[in-house]
Image (cartoon, rainbow, N blue to C red; front, top):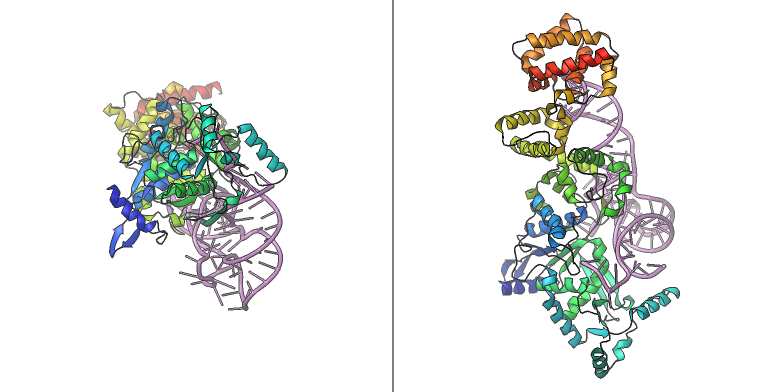
Length: 555
RNA sequence: GGCCCCAUCGUCUAGUUAGGUCCAGGACAUCGGAUUUUCAUUCCGGUAACAGGGGUUCAAAUCCCCUUGGGGUCACCA
């Protein structure tokens, strides 16, 4: 297996074949095995921008029938792994992005946790030291820092002093024996240039004479990010490194490391980072307070706050925010909506296509159509995608979701009870388009609260009921007719009320808003007659009685 | 500050590789109208952009140069 992959790789890494996944090899067409990876460090939450990067990696792998790898960058972690990694895996599972190699699914190239791959880094380090591509640097951090600042003051480009390079083998051994601390640096070939052909940015070049020698291993011997990444990317046969633009400046170092190690370099695709709505700044967990003031974020925060408060989650805390994938799950977004919004940040298929299912994304995705400039998350559009996909969802699934949210808010008891399920199903059906996220079910909580706990829209109650003297009498008559009518279902109720209007020469607006307010506490809502039917004769009667007593009391 | 990246409606974007079919298309948002018992949905319609300046060319959103603006990154973090 491995040998096949290598022989295949040899044909595309010779930079003849680019941006294509099929290449000719000795007259026969070989589909190369694309291998992509996403390498989060366990931070305790999944960043929405990171999720988009992961999605592009996943899509590219799936599109090419390749392999998607989840590698855990836990080189400097000391916290509880479950706590730190859990939410990340949870986000992948929720969105349905599976991994071929990763936690619980070790691949042929060793464990996916970098903390368990130390021997590989040690071996690579040894090779670089032996070949002279890397060197031990005994210069003190303070001294290095001093030089850096001096260069800066003189407006010179800082490059490493390399004084340790003048040490003889004996001197090095002596220092080592004496326990003198040193880091290991890559010896940058200063006369060289690094040129990459980035899938989204095209040709990007760097002049090595401007680069300080990067530290690749700490004084305790542990590898640094740039180094571990290169070793792992090579060991795991990663063919395409798809990552956010902020890593572009790491690329020359990584290319140099690959060269020094004698690896084939992977292809690069530096995708734009996800910006905060309406800005070009990277969206960040630390700026939530600022985002709350952002008008483009308004609707999302309103939606989120409303739902989360019902679930007993403190929405104003930074523990859960729109920067995190978990936020959307908690509010009741569905994967299809979130995925659709994510894929359209920085990527388009053509000038028309907006709606894409995951399988359509797989067949249509390409790195070449990723845009270069940073793209802001568009909360309005996210909500719009969300409502589109929610409408596509089969009734049974909508029901399951709403049941969960209702239960978590304590509005219903046993979700397996068939009467409860049937009732909620009717409410969900009645709510129809108003349900964009599962949490929107709370917007029709009048169907779940006790009659005497019904919240009243005071402002509208005053305007449409209290300030219209004639309405009380009408409501009393309607209440009586409701008591007398035989069939308390929407059709007959519709006829009953229409007749009532005719008899009194009233327009719908004279009665319906007041009636709606009394029974639901709201000025607007779904079909009035179906609402009456669902609530049922008894609850409607109770609520009318309660409203009438409010009217009598003048409040 | 050095290095690197980016620049089309309010937002997400198409168009830039091969200059003309673009007095710039779509979507979301917004505004107006129709439908509806209200709200939501749906359907019609409107407002709205090539950062600026120089070139090259018969012709530039598209090519070149400069300016301006925005951003990323400069660790014994990832």
